[in-house]
Amino acid sequence: MSKSRQRGEKSPLYRKVNTRTHGVHHGSGLRAADERGTKSGAQRSMHSGQRHGLDYTPLFRFLLSRVGTPWDSVYAEAVSRLDKPEPIFWLVAEHPEDRRDVVRTGESSYYNGLFVDGGGLLAIVDPTITIERIAPQCPCCTHSFNGKTVPRKFTEHSLPLVAPN
Figure 1 (cartoon, one colour):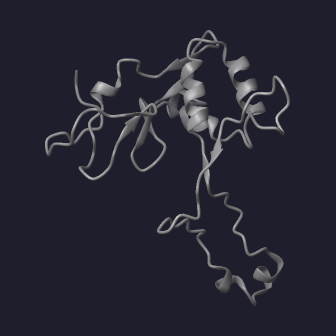
Figure 2 (cartoon, helix red, strand yellow):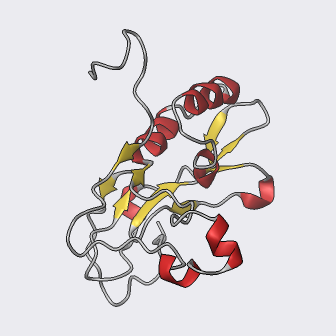
């Protein structure tokens, strides 16, 4: 436990990742050299406003562990432990038309889609989708589902992300 964290205080639901590793590039969209010397560029900082190096895997695992509990309490706790509330809604659909069975959160990281049911409880959009049904999309990446490595191997015939039962 961190010395700065007080007794009983819970850890954040995100973590910093190494952004200085050789070969890891985090593009900002605009180069500072392109902004310099312009009227709009003179008033902005050299930083683009993007925050690199944050991993929300702990949030996603937290949300999945709270399936079946009242959404209001889950949301209140999650927001209190985050830097911003937006990542919650990467997994949890706010509207019925936003529901997705599987949500991609990284290059090869997938999670069950979540929503709030009519009773106000956090629920999985399609609980029949399990790690055994996830098919890797390429042979070069290690795919994960709900934070665990997908056990199936890539085959040319495993094109759909979710294989039929």
